[in-house]
Image (cartoon, rainbow over all chains, first blue to last red; front, top):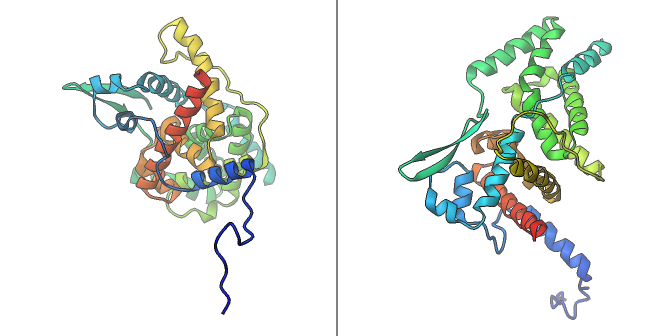
Length: 99
Length: 202
């Protein structure tokens, strides 16, 4: 019975070039539902952004709090964004043309 | 829709008025409008457009980074929704959301953006001082570029959570996945965004 040699050094396996290896690594990271390796965001920031009650002095002492406070202000501003006023008319016009 | 911070005994939390799952009465109201359309009142479809266009537009802008393309996706999606209105089962808002979300994903597959734009508005913002307003413009651009660098699934989760202000439960229903998986996506999106924004600032 023949067996495949699974040793990558002798099985004809070709190591990807440096750039290819980086792409492969990126793909695998995007598809897994796992924490990012070396994640640096304090758990208290995640909890606050998720709307959970957190200890305020501890929150404000967290390193990335100023950044996320600014991001949060910006994203909340974007919640006021409205669709162009003309869009309803344009859609209804297209529907009427269809008959 | 809005956000405020509450403080109770030294604890603070972001309190959000989020578009959670619609009440049964809203689902019934949507169905009543659909029934009117099928009864020959084609203009009634405009009520559904008015009801859902803003939140869907925010999703499309968040995903594409382009208000013009977002408007095109929204328009095409509502026309498609009208053409297939007989296929609605259950929540109309969830059904039309999926059409828009798929439109955004198709756009992202086909278009490689050369620039990002974000239209200024003249509405008062949450920023208090002129310095903060200047800072806001820079953050907007940096955030748009960082969002564009995220994998689609992470960008989608972040936009739904933070730009649309949805609950994890509503997101799970719309995307047909679990709350745990979505929390993980949002957390990973935040980690990636923080890394990108800190690199930009360095």
